[in-house]
Image 1 (cartoon, rainbow, N blue to C red):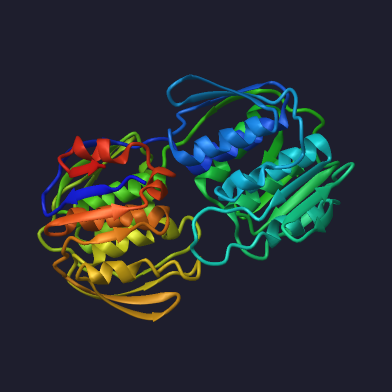
Image 2 (image 1 turned 60 degrees about the vertical axis):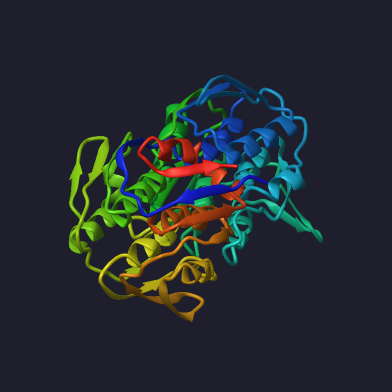
Length: 417
């Protein structure tokens, strides 16, 4: 298993490019199964989660070509099985997105409880209840779920909790449900909007994506098309936080600053100087950064996926603040290692911590528990004095393409061994 060796305490400088959003691209691979025609997916990040998704599709008998870097062509003319491979699915939370297209195409799908990062309870009740509302039958064995339906029928479904993947899955299923489907309390993330735009470009009739209310009129067939993956807003935000935490001058290009409104608003109140362009964010060094409490929320609120790197930034700011993680229970457990690096953090309960700064961080040997915490440890190691060794970097590779090579280009002392 590879590790990262990082020597921190150095200011960085230069330009770093944002890749396509893996959470958007993964859903496009799923949507490609809704049609028997070719679907071209562009600006795809070359990360582990994408490779696992390609394995799943090929296991289903779907043809996947990779003609050039960052581009894939998916042809689901034939799908040989309705069973999603359990061993691969357990490594990939987004595997559940395949349930909707397989149910539509084959009338049946069998899948395990999906895997991914271990960050607290991530139930799939919303998927089960949503498919049931559309007329599907649910059978739950010891380790597998089977959903079947000869024909889905339009219905009204209100999400009990906002779910990005749940919204995307039911939106896809509703495209082929007879009549009209109304979805309420939907996720408003840019990835949902991007998926709806793609579905409509292929002939679907989806309205309201980006709002809590989505209306879908069922159709009989979907054409092939081209999906251009939006920039990864979490990666862009992580790089912006890295720049602020290390007091560095970094330009983050190929991003959409509008997707970062909440984070940039916090930067402004904290005294972090930022310059914005149409497709870039430029962060300048700040002598002193004011602390601000944060509460994670669904988009357009503060993203739970930026909570970890932002906690590292808070250790370098002046003041005492509260971090309230509202989305996932247990997602603050990673801060125990940050304490070992010298951070002044008080754990209040599974959802809340207090951080007092500024703290001098020291290099340590640490293990990445999940994707976002792994990125936070990289930020912490680059802030820290001395050498840090970060293990289990597979977790980081799941969502960040060649992260060490890109950081090296802006002056980071990081290498993979």
